[in-house]
Length: 202
Image: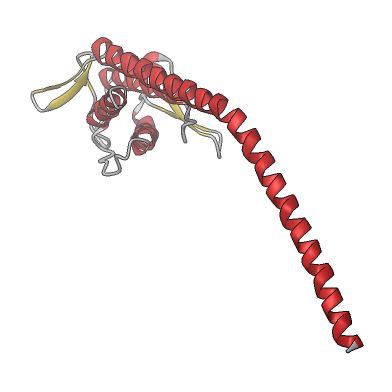
């Protein structure tokens, strides 16, 4: 009997402790609820401000994209893609001064757009008009987007490939993964159009 009474007493104390703990938990939960209810309007207001800022940023990016397309028009002329009337030879074809100038423009646009999107490109560029170049940071190697002599042709081809990879990297941000790296100017146009389209998204 004494043992049973001891167990009962122990269980009673435990029940009391549990009730107290439950009461304290309820009080803590209620206190947290009150704090959240007081801060909720502020959080909602901050969320609205952030969403408005994102929308403004998207519209600004779209506006800039539209201006870039107007200033540097990309066109298909007689089965050859041009930017500002300058032809870009496909990767693997001999690069002329005209192509070097066109690639300099493309490199500048890609670098400019990446900054606006807040993206670090895999292969940064050195933009110097028709004497632009691409850089592989891991090896600190500079690949010219122009040809000073025939011996530069393999390095120029590599530079053009690196530039194509940068455009592909930015296209992936917009869910565009089926990319033909050889189509440099069509890919650039697709990128600018994607940025522009996002500015109209709700």
